[in-house]
Length: 185
Image (cartoon, rainbow, N blue to C red; front, side):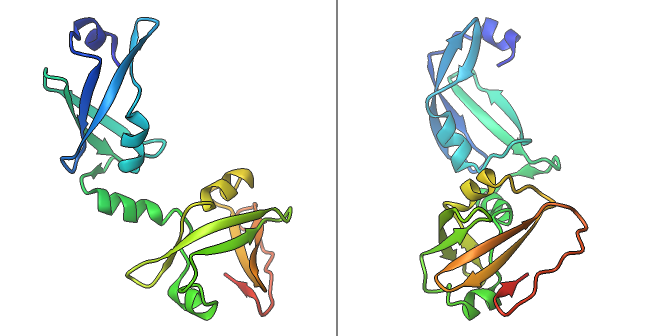
């Protein structure tokens, strides 16, 4: 927190953060080396509000241990609706189009097994969405981190009996195309 705020702050160690949807989170303030940080409860606030690196937060303190938080995404647009933020950010989790989900019988499954180029297994939770897509949840981000999958990379899913094989193409504009009956772009 800014030094000027820390110097004038006389509030208790426990405060509330009110998010854009009006919901409040209890967060403990911790002092370290004459600086003040949000501590216990902060991770839940971050998770519940779908915060990502690069988001910009504005805190308004009311003087009574309540901070109203305005959240802006990387494009400087204010995020007011957490359901919209959830939907918008879930598009970063490589959702599976309905035509593929139906063809590969993913609509009835709760998990799928991904295998990366090193043949490591990644169980990934899948959730059918109301609009027909299937969303890959728990496990997908871990797979991306472990395989250093970044924006601009191409990931090809090859549906093999019992699992899905990942092919990762790291060069942008790569001309290589994998073909075959089980390869879906």
